[in-house]
Image 1 (cartoon, rainbow, N blue to C red):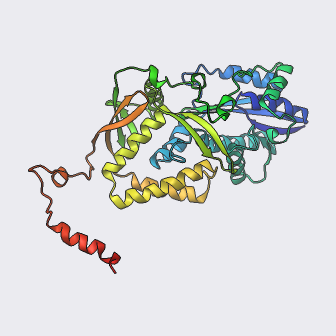
Image 2: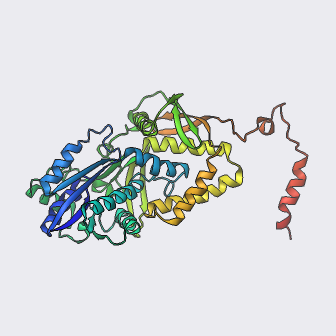
Image 3: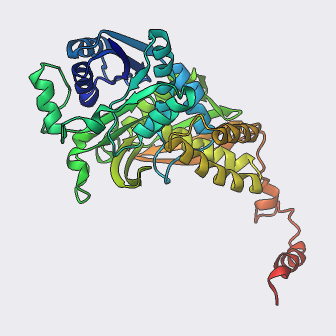
Length: 393
């Protein structure tokens, strides 16, 4: 019998895909990647395994990849200040190449010549999985059941799952499509497809509504060393634990919600809502620290590199030569990104309020308008004349 390794999430699409692939004559081996989606959510990987087996899988691999995800995927993106279209901190996009890496490894181990995923033909994840797989092993075949099967809606998939007694965590009343990992949550479908409708509170999983959080602000101080977050309020954390802690703190104060109509890679616009408390806090702090320690030209050029970096991640080109080359540039910029940023979390906002670094390029004696001023203002006239010279006719 032909073997296929399926990237299995335990959700509606992949649960139906297990049964459907088996009906096509495949032995289905499922791979479940733990990227931190279970932290604080009560995610039961034992139940996910049972769900895959009940749907018809012959074997289920479950791998805890949280540390690898954080160190090798999230951290490089954080150093790059990668944010797509100014709002999306790329949680799902960062997880896909790591999942593809292990899909390929398991396919080799099981001597399978085919891998599969549960992505739709409208989405970005199909590109991320297939391009990454193609780069890592172009000889593997790829099947995308959702692109070719007979179901025309999520409601039909729900009926199919119920017909085969596949337990699923979705209903026709709340048909959201959710992808979750330690860096954030992506939520789409259902009532969110109506652009005139405000996202209902039941769509959010880890953030409190800003209107229902504390009337008092929460102050936290994040310390970075070489661009890597190391401490919160003076206490050292392992990076995975640090992100989890910030997810909890940020979520309690409504930080990290985003409602975005984004440009998908396939050419359509779609509405997604995101929750990313820790990502929002760390992105804000890291970018603020860079503004303190990077010189103007480097900082401005890095903005350009950050935009391209975010596009490469979003477009599924994590393993591309350009992205690898940008990593080398980004890492070279982090030498002096050491110091602390104090942030105020209040009713959904995350605002830097204090900064400190031994590599700071800020000089009070040059910036002040007080009596300590050492800036020679008489030099400004000559500077302006020389600066404006090329533009005079």
